[in-house]
Image 1 (tube, helix red, strand yellow):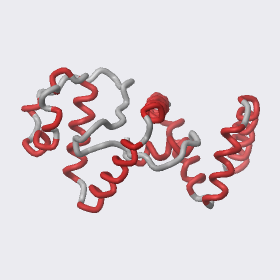
Image 2 (spheres, helix red, strand yellow; image 1 turned 90 degrees about the horizontal axis):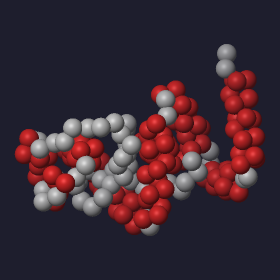
Image 3 (cartoon, helix red, strand yellow; image 1 turned 180 degrees about the vertical axis):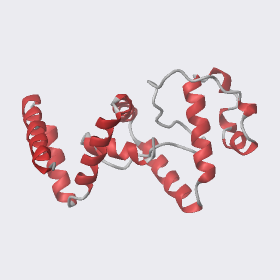
Length: 173
């Protein structure tokens, strides 16, 4: 999944924006999908030297990390190495925003990310499509829609979904 996928998920689920997709520099904790398929454990020494250097802060506890976490950290380190300086600065800023969130909020975001990861590709594409439409709206309208969604009852939300699907069906050729 690309970094923007988390932003897509958060916007569609009516969460405020401003959290990082992942921490690629090996500092602190980053959101990692824990519901992923079983991944093989990685030997830290088997990674390229540049990745090992980035993951040095995890060296002491590497062997005790779940394999999925090891894989995620290795992927993050690889992405970090492929970023240009501007992208790295943006990632640092997003990571600091993530770290500033209360733990309860981060846990909610992690759970919702896992829900998104379990969706079939067609449903994920629909989430992305909805996000793009949502992102095109002016900020005041996004806030109003977010507030309306959060204040709606489950029945009202179901009705909103039905209306959205009806509009989508009318637009299809």
